Image 1 (cartoon, rainbow, N blue to C red):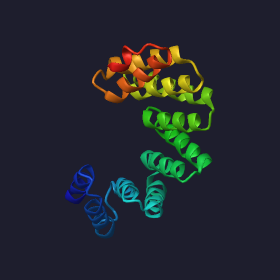
Image 2: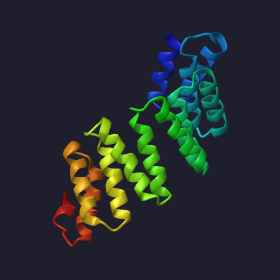
Image 3: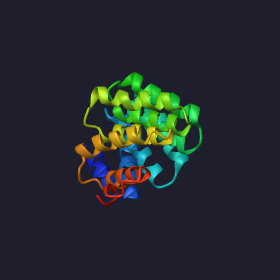
Image 4: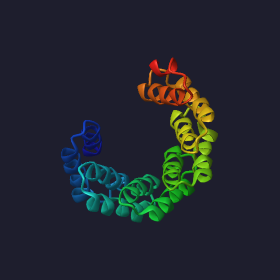
Length: 193
């Protein structure tokens, strides 16, 4: 359906109001569309990007009602986390994994939530779970590095950041973080990377 793809294109260009208009047209004029759950989810993302969390939540809930759509659970998890509803965020991320065990973004989100809660063992388990599915996921190594850093284990944090850097050698943020870790050890030569 043309409105679906055009809405997606608008969203990729950060033209969320236009994306919402196209997704709304589909919801209003083609409610039997086979991917209507995806339309609700995508409109929810656009609403979220526009700062309209209540409308985003309604659309994620609708996508879940229609199809138990795993991405809607994931997106609702992000929304719940931002709203400070940590238990709901955890539940939705876990539901995402139950529905789609290889969806690494849910593991990363759970890892981030657990890290924020200072539940470091649980956070590390989530970041390591990502590596079961994708050994080249730099975000999992960065997450592990952050947990190690939080615990004062600078050497282990450096090792994880070096793994991330091997995957994404041009990533300035990884270079910056690695430089900070090396600086904590008094090695300022690596801080200039």
